[in-house]
Length: 235
Image (cartoon, rainbow, N blue to C red; front, side, top):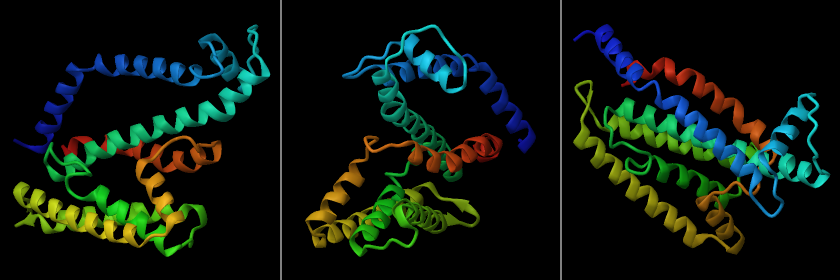
């Protein structure tokens, strides 16, 4: 079967499931309204819409308190937007990873990518490196995860093809190696470093600000735009 016919077949299958995307978009909008509205300070959906419209210069006759405005715009909205961006990035990167490795079982945790990224982050915390300022930690984690991905991919290739069994074995081996090294570095960390490692490993959106969103949005949006163009060829 030619590449063109394969791509056409995938397009037909996607078209048959075209109803799923609008439904998920509606669910996302509902989750967005709940995320920014629920909390110690209640912000009803109509107030959320009024605040958002006011930020783009559209006046709406809805009573909005200064407290609701401050809580939604400065605290909740950056967290929800960043959470949506990160969720989209994780979903698309997982799909790309499975396409590259030709294996629906491939995921960052299984083939060692997550452990490699964690190792890069923990090493940066322990060593105290700050070459790129506040961006040093995410850059180090990204580079370590990318290096692990490349290493797994290269070691699992045989005669120009990816061997699934070898991919899983190499991924598990690198996963164990990176996890053991991370454990050693964690053992050597002091109290402050250990706290930073725990918080980074658990993750969270509590410290999200608009500056955080603006720094994360460009690379994520670029990938979200480019990935669908490569989807049919990677699948």
